[in-house]
Image 1 (cartoon, one colour):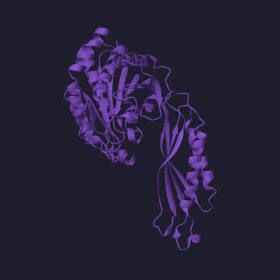
Image 2 (cartoon, rainbow, N blue to C red):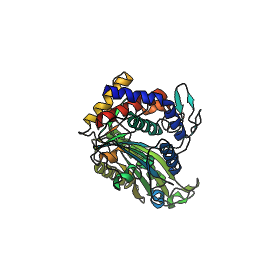
Image 3 (cartoon, rainbow, N blue to C red):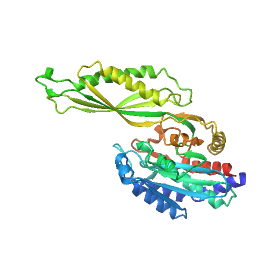
Image 4 (cartoon, helix red, strand yellow):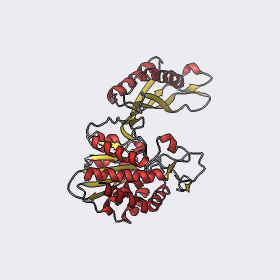
Length: 408
């Protein structure tokens, strides 16, 4: 296999400038989610893929379904290349990303190259792996290797809103049924498990009244204050629930948004909280949700005259390490360690990802792609997000070699 690996490496080196230009083109088409108007990026991606003779399937999610989820447009892309009879390996990355926000010193949509790095929103997470996976596949095709199986590219656009209209859409409709999955990640670690996430919207209804006559109203904000205290105190309990997965520590609860009241001279009659409860892989999502709802109800019951509504916004289950992914993980580590010249750990991540949707179907999976050691190093979801180009080059080689081994 070493001759094939050398051939793959050589092709990737010769076409690396083209790979960087490919990534620049993707960064320059915004995919801010919200608002989530991502079909234009999918079309641009499809054009680039077709320009290098890859056959692209466009799977448009119906407009009414997309709008009901809070977005504008979603078109997922699938590329399939069959080398021969054998298993199907899917390579999945998402193109949607949070808006750039403030504080940038580089154009978030410029794809600027400086000091060996490319800057731009989604340069690291995860448009980088559109490039990684595309050029790994191209190198395999051009190698002429006699491989047994199929490689699929899944480029999807709903990760920020939970993935159900991205990979979830492709899987639930039977558009794809892969045997193995590699998903967008980081080049210095192989991730095999991740946290889950429960998000709830909690509405407290009181009775608004003039601030000059506060006794005629029921203050929803005071009730919200009691609830906030109880929710954050619950973190003391959660810190004692330790995960046994390296890279994951304990569950956590965060209130990310609060809104309410009508004016400064009015007793607030309504307050809305939005909370995020991260779940370690050892936790049961149903038990967690019941626990959080019980805590909310018990606390609000201590505020007479307050009515509470609890609405689930998101339930993303955790990914547990698969007992069937050993060959995949071993190949990724072997080639990453050879190309990066250092130990590549196998870990979990406190993030939640679309990989859980594949894992729920029993598909062996690992998270690996271009990027630094941690999310924080890349400034992902912060100003001046960037990717070291040498990490992109080496990760592309790791993916190409790994797929070659699995399909040899």
